[in-house]
Image (tube, rainbow, N blue to C red; front, side):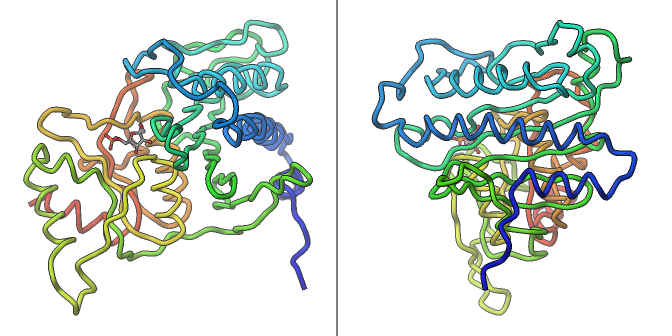
Length: 334
Ligand code: P6P
């Protein structure tokens, strides 16, 4: 007997009904983000067939070559959210500064959205999984005016919701609120995200470690000691662990959420803050993994406690199964 089909709309409306005072704006915003990602999905799925693959010929604030799909995804999200009743402004990996939607309606919208429109885009040409990552904050400035930088530079513990869409062998939307983490798989025949992974939980222990091992010569001693632990021949403790690394954060974290394990992008001798961005990569993944029972640290503090100073700042990250993250951190303490 197949389970009743529950769409993302059904689910978010049911969640809203659990809070009598809820206005449904957060649910409506999640549905808007889902719509934008369905539009992006359409292009991602046929990227090999149309002249949309390859370099856009520009670079973003990170100094990274912008792939055409990056720009398309960024513009799609901005256009959909600008028309949303509930979004007052956005910030994106692809845009130097935040964008305040400067119309009367948006001045009275309650939320701001930050996103990495197409994370892992260096994998587009090799057809590896890529994704859209997003967070939703309630604005801190008064309604009736345009949002300002302080509406965006909030620490992760103030997040209202966070999620990602992974464009892989299937297209899935996973999002977390304080009520938990739920996964929805896109059913193309009806164009709806349907509940497929209710109440996702990350295992306390795992057998997979995930990092770019090519950077080993640059790692600090503590990271090298944890790597030695993962690769140690200790059958009683289930080691050596398996090494898996896709090089697309959404895909590596999705596997970690489903199978357990640890993903790390640590600081190294060259990059004192690692590579991944706090606001729209590390915070959303930390919010999701913590809501699923896991752990996320920068090595010195909880990711969600970092007080942001810049929109595109980077932090090191150790994230996944609680016991594995604690094991990795134990070397840093020592
Ligand atoms: P490296 C993709 O470019 C990305 O931002 C993340 O999705 C991914 O985890 C990381 O960078 C991969 O970085 O240095 O291993 O190629």
